[in-house]
Image (tube, rainbow, N blue to C red; front, side, top):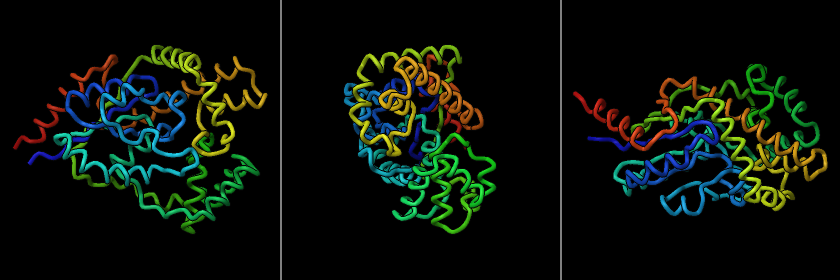
Length: 308
């Protein structure tokens, strides 16, 4: 019996994932699950490059603008929620679903599973948040070095979210976060084929720069102003908003803020590429990738899988 098929389309920011995913989903008559940790939140369509109203109308999407900015969400919650949705999506869509997004931890959580971690209590979350506010990232890192020296040795010291996550888990569980990570791949009741868009670096960087300019022209500054009063919540601790908030605070001029958004987005794209290059299961699609590329590989996968 043929199992359902989950088609994952990922790649660096600004590489064309959204349009490709919509083309594929329309050809298959299926729905799209967004694996973007910021597009989840409402009120951020410009800064997160969320699908446009026309794109959302073209294909049913899930996890777009579904949370308030003050809501807490994680890759583990995404795994649970997406797995809960997929059986109905497969039934409605002839056994297919498309996942589109560049939040690699969310993609990995759905594809490979995430280790069973304790639920963080409000008390622990408040305690870590207070430490972050009072002592900043250096204070968090100092505590992580004491609490979990193994994870401290490998963590990205610029990624505050991961530092906070490790501290919350360690404090809640009473054991180091690193001891709870098994790295065991979860079994899924569906087949998975994963694609990533490969684009020459210079072309990608030029696309990023142009997209930032278009975001500014489309009203990104006003969008950031509208959420400025919530600038300390985690959902806004992301490229674009952080730089514009610095501009609003008077610690950065406008031109510098825009240039910094472009630079930090390029850095983020490089990190996405590094993550993906380590994954041997990824099928790389040369840009410009087409729906025909995806569907051809998918058909071949199905044919190979069903051979005796």
